Each structure stands twice: as structure tokens, then as C-alpha cells.
Length: 132
Image 1: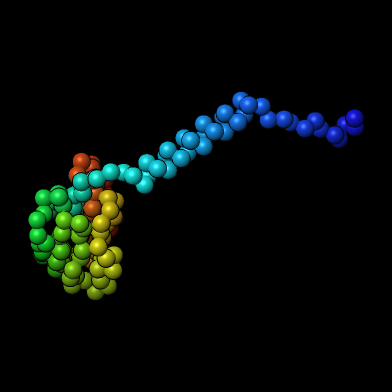
Image 2: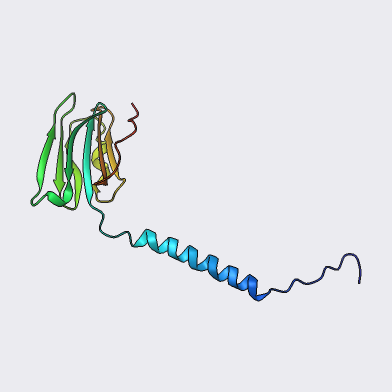
């Protein structure tokens, strides 16, 4: 046998058991992301870093419009399945382009108006901060 020849490593049954355990764990983690269950959603509206409105979406029976007044006025359409920035008087209207917020963690931000709309879990923590 030459020094350049290396012996061929044979897999043992222990190696296959470890690979199987790792694959099962990875599969369970991936499934947990797909099947989160029914998370109760809450809309939180901030204006100039202050909470001005909070509502659990499961308590909403029919769509309601929430008006935000300030330098630029906004109208939010709040429904049991999500929140939409229906109208914004700001110059760029980027907040309207987000569409309907339907999942926890989604947000719409209107920087000129100083308004942040966050859709979060009902038991979520308060926001850490808003960039200006």
C-alpha cells in the first residue's frame, strides 16, 4: 500500500442512525413552521412612537375604518382577516403598496406621517423602536 492510498471508510449502523435522527429532527422543525396553528392576530398602530390603537382581529365582526389624523391623514381598513392602508395623503404612498397585512410580523410604515401599523400575535411584546 502506498502512502497516497487511504483506506476506504465504511459506514457503520451507528452512522446511519445519527443521519436518520438528524433528518427526523430537521423534518419536525420544518413542519412546525408550516403548521403554527390558529394564532390570534392583533393590530397595533403607532404614531410618533406612541401606541394610538390596538385591536385583536378576532373580535372584529364587520370591517371598520380607523382614521389617523396628523401632518398627513390616513385611513386603515381593519377586518377580521387583516389590515389594509386604504388611503394615505402622504406624497409617496409607499404604505399603501404593502397591500393587506394578514400574517404576524407584517407591517406598513408611513415615514412622512410617522405612522407604523404592525400585525402581531395577540400576546406579542411591545415594539422596541421606530426608525425615523
